[in-house]
Length: 368
Image (tube, rainbow, N blue to C red; front, side, top):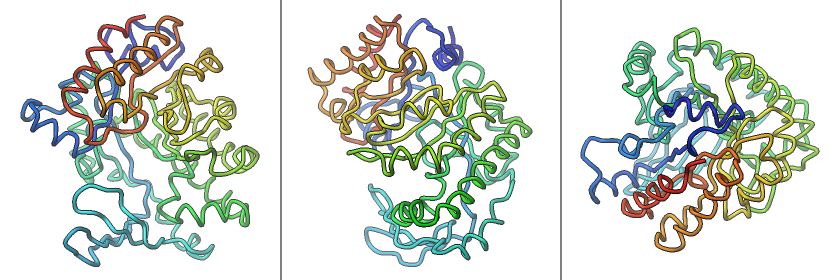
């Protein structure tokens, strides 16, 4: 069974030969692994024979001109393609937003027309890589790289797209987005509906360009450590209809959907299933999620991807071995559909030796 066939089985309701596996090591993690013995010139996804090895990305920004506004010793302040400004660290660290392009309804009216169907919005690279590492901004190069990818026929390639919440975080900011959900529901509805239709048209365009994915990976961080960022009722009223629009369109192509959200999303899972997701990812351990509990409740409806603590992977030894073995064996013994993944992405606290051991555990324990 190829990796492509394995992931297709897991996402379409069937049990394959073994659990799937995918991982998203940071640039800094891959640099550490290179120092620790990862073969030169070999990407970690190839070295560890991941089932999900490459991906297609799409740029849903307003594509405004970017510029460096300040160049400090440890960071740069940049003008973003969504019209805001961010402080970006030169070494490791998450960019810190300083301002946003949309501050009122007038800004949205002015900028919405910039959501164009440009073929050069697509990129192709390894799963987990940043946009800067992918082939992008030239659709002919993207198409050629995609067609010539040596594992395209044997591994599963998703198209990664943002949901309406994720799509507007960089345009509005999380604080204003949450305020407007409560105070400007008609404006938010217009934004979310526009975004959902835009994602549908971009999927159409990807397929027209010969960039057909094996599934669609929808990212939308609707939760934090202690629960949803807004009430379940607000999700159902203001976001769920647009999730349905995107997922229905994906399903019309016969493609499954993996939905990503950080945090404690448990209150939304029944509604996400109702909206049509086929797999939930990444199920953060630090937010109280346990794939075994979720499988008992929803394992007859969806597959699961993730829930291996990054802290355990960094610690290695018995902590890592026990968590990985217990969860994988539970999923295989009870024939729940599972794809190995950390509970987010993999920072550079995890050594190459620890990760190699983790993959060895999957090889031994991951068969159905």
